[in-house]
Image 1 (tube, rainbow, N blue to C red):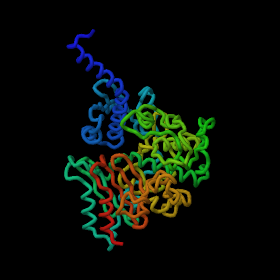
Image 2: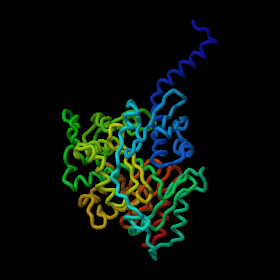
Image 3: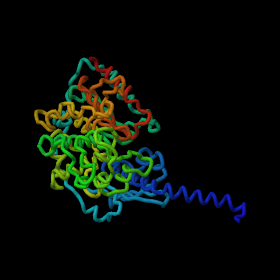
Image 4: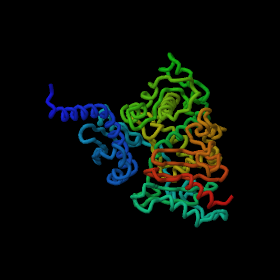
Length: 452
């Protein structure tokens, strides 16, 4: 029989071991998130690692991780008290990815020359193809009120939880207001992570492929692994509207399909297609980063050539609409991580929103399939008016003081591109946190500053 004086210490040791075993997998989520976030912030966006640690990584269990940045080899290794660690690698043209089980050296040999059209003297090229702004004065805009609203989107100091990085306001296609968080080192040239706004870029890729006749949204998804079970009935449209019927769990605080996909697997497409069937497609709407990465893998198959796949969004979308800063990041297997990983300046994110404001046409050049933007804004049957095709909607008046025709890109940390056709507005808000930010009041103030 155990002596009582040893019993309590023994129970404490056992409890620590049990908790440690149960929580250990979460450490790889935290270190994976830390390494990937730090690497992208430093090597893609050119940010200060100390600011990234203070702001981007200062929450939940992630704040207990520590990251070592190797500027010579362009890697970041993040550890949790030595118990778990992950390494992220920068690759030219592909952005950053977690190395996982792949040798760092082999990943670093994979580089890609972005087919970006160099626009010399962009400050002399008129907006929106360049950055030369017109001295246009719209009499319906109360400039004092608009400036007040834009300034109010930023906190008075780095301690303010709003942590807004940039705001850009377009009215009738013209840039009428913008502001950047200089205290965080943000300028008009700073690339800012779009997070789940990347899903809307996958929508654009689908819109181009549809125009080219390479994609039929009503066709079943061409995933060979699904042919022998009930997943064979899932259509491209089901995936676009996040109504696939797959047993997906978008839980970031625990080990789940989404954390396995983003922080454990080197192949986001393969990880996502392994999720099993749950119910009939189209009957339930469920937010799923996995379905977007399935679409990304399908696009890779349809395009049929990796070089052309990696060039596709640049040649078919970004270069045509004046976007020169965008970097879509891939996983270790070369798939665009369409759910989460894209980076661009605030003005370039505004250009992306302007493409949809202009119904998929750019200065007479049809980029997206005819009727694609209307399809994008059509509510998924089971979403109660909240979601279309890789875009969020306001049909259910989630933002009560904003018109119902609003549709928008929505990303982690409060990234947004709002498109309000009835009010001729495209509004971009980017940040390093969404905490404490009231998007309804923000948009309400802008709408008030621009008279009907």
